[in-house]
Image 1 (cartoon, rainbow, N blue to C red):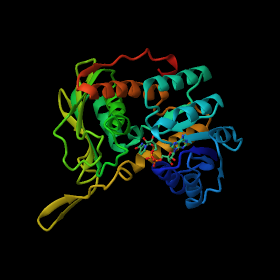
Image 2: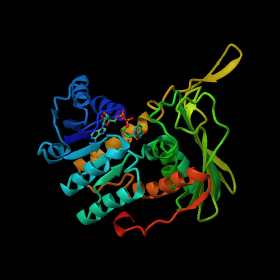
Image 3: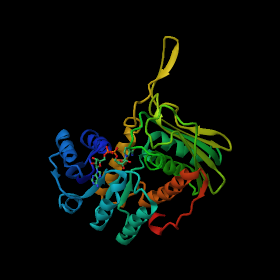
Image 4: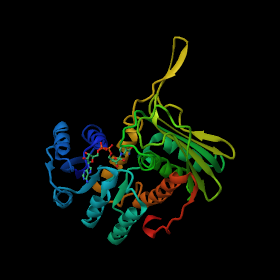
Length: 338
Ligand SMILES: NC(=O)c1ccc[n+]([C@@H]2O[C@H](COP(=O)([O-])OP(=O)(O)OC[C@H]3O[C@@H](n4cnc5c(N)ncnc54)[C@H](O)[C@@H]3O)[C@@H](O)[C@H]2O)c1
C-alpha cells in the first residue's frame, strides 16, 4: 500500500480522494495539510481516512508513514511542497500548473536534476483520457498525414467567480490545451498570441476578459486555435480537432450517449468539469501509485512538461497585454527527460 501525504484539500483533492477510496488500488492518504485546517479535517472525516492532520508541509513530507506526496493546493502554492518532496527523495504528484511562472518550474527541474531521477508527475490528466489517447494514436499512425492545423474548445460553466481574472484563463484553463496540443503534435511551439472576441455581456467577473482566443504556432508552420470561455451557459464542453494532409481526427463532439425522442436527437452535456475526465483522473493517479509501489521511475507528464507549459503560459499572459504575437524560447531539454 502506497501511503500518501495530501497537501491542499479543495475541489480537486475531493475528486482524487474519492477515486482513491472507491475506484483505485493500493493507495491511501495517511497525512494531510491544508493552510485552512478545517478543510483538512473535513476531507479526513468525509472519507474516513484516519490520517494525521498536520500544521505544516514539512511534517507531512517528513512523516515516516508517507511514501509519496499529492499536491492539490492552489496554483501558487505548488512549488514549495514539490521541492521539499524531491529533497526528501519522495515521489510527488502535483496538480497543474506545476507553477504559475516558468522560473519557478525551473527550480523544480533543477531540484529533480540534482536528485538524479524523475520524482514528479504533473496533473496533465488529458494525456490519460481514452479519447485523447485514441486521437494521438490516429495522428501518430500517419493515417491523416502530417498534422497541419487544429482547433480546441475549452468552455467552462458560468458564472465565472471574481477569483477569475484575465490571466487565470491561461494557468487555470488554457494550460491544458498548451500541454495536450504539444503532446499531440509532438513539436515545440515558436509563438503564441491571445486575442479577445466580443465581450460576453453575461460575464460577471469584473477583472476577467471573456471570451479569449489563443493561437499556438509551431516550428513546422502548424497552427492551433483554442477558444476559451469561463461563461459557457449550456455546460462544460471540451473539443479537439486535428486537421492533417489526408484527413481530420477529432474527439467525439460530446462523449455521452445519443437519445432520439420526440422528434429530436440529443446528448446530455456535463454541468461542470468534474465528470468529463473522471477516467483520466483515475488512470493518472493509479499510474503514479503503481510506479511508486514498484519503485519505478515516473513516466507520466514530467516537470519538464510543466516547465514547457509554463514558458508558453508566461508568453500567453504577456500577449494578453496587447494581443501581440509573442515568441517562445525554451532551454535545451536535459537528458533526464529525453
Ligand atoms: N486537473 C484538473 O482538471 C484540475 C481541476 C481542478 C483544479 N485543478 C488544480 O488543482 C489545484 C486546486 O484547485 P481546486 O479547484 O481544488 O481549488 P480549491 O480552491 O477548491 O482548493 C484549494 C485548496 O488549497 C488550499 N491552500 C491554499 N494555499 C495553500 C497552501 N499554501 N498550502 C496548503 N494548502 C493551501 C486551500 O485552503 C484550499 O483548500 C489548482 O492548482 C488547480 O489548478 C486541476
